Length: 311
Image 1 (cartoon, rainbow, N blue to C red):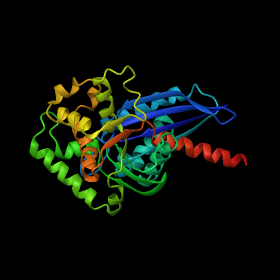
Image 2: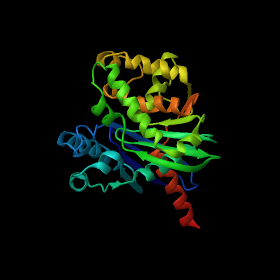
Image 3: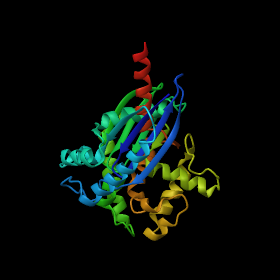
């Protein structure tokens, strides 16, 4: 019996998952932690990680380290994505994490992040043809799946945090702000030639903002395990109704919406614009939600490598 852990240091949240792996290759989750660190907050056009955000993140990582210390024979894969990837002070931050937490963090390319998303989805959902869309805090990964194979991928440097900071008032959002944001996102989508091949395909949605759609809808339906959204499907009219609700609410009203985390209320509109825009762009009729992405993809990569090493 061994343990494998993945730390996913994102732009908005830091997440830890620990699996126990049995001798026969089966596995199950033994620990799962999440902290909203908002690492990309205030980076601005200079792309500099801010002190308060770094302190929040290091505190979260120290908590993760304490949790992992209880497990024997543990292998760790710690990765950082868009915020650290874009940061001018990346090296100083990574050295500080090593010094204060004792963890080596690898900054992965957006393409690798997209590959992990694909592995996490394809190994746990019956996806045949789809566009996988992972909207994070400072990047969005798009992956075209045809006949269960990865055909194209791209990582775009926008997400819920940096789009919100750049385009939207955090409290009462104006129509002109939303129009400018949607127009900018549409322009970027228009520049991705292979997206035309995803026309009319369902979208498999990952990322905290996208998953919030499913949580709000399941709370409306009074589903007991409303956060258990893996494989859950939503049609476009239900998505539009929720987007309309959050768009027409001020910050305090958004905080009160059941299923919407209070700490996400100021960035939820910016976080939802990419997927709502993509639904129209592809003329897609539904979303399928995945709880599995980067961390699970890293697990499947590890399991495959371990199996090959045994041969």
